[in-house]
Length: 145
Image (cartoon, rainbow, N blue to C red; front, side, top):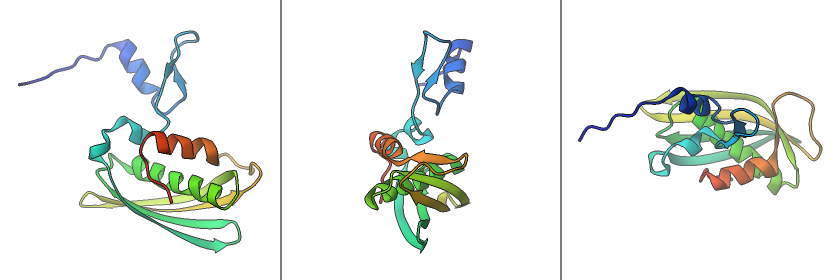
């Protein structure tokens, strides 16, 4: 059985807002998934593990691996979830992303990410509120440390 779908301009506008809290004109706001992984069936993604290494004081390295990722964003989301939960476990409320290196070999994805964790909102553009991100990860079935 062949199934086809036609996506109209309205649906395309909603899809283009994926990953944002709200898409669409004011008053017609449509809730969007917090992470790209939330858009995939859970069975398609296989999270293979997280390794955490404290580099220095508040500087933390996360090495994550997974299968079934659609691209580097999925494995980066996995690393961000690990960082958020790590910050909470250590009694911090925030993390700042420094870098993430992603590699894929034969469908096996790996990310090597470095974050700083802190009690107060750090300076910088790539900061995360650990409680909010960890909650989104739990809602979307993305494992954490």
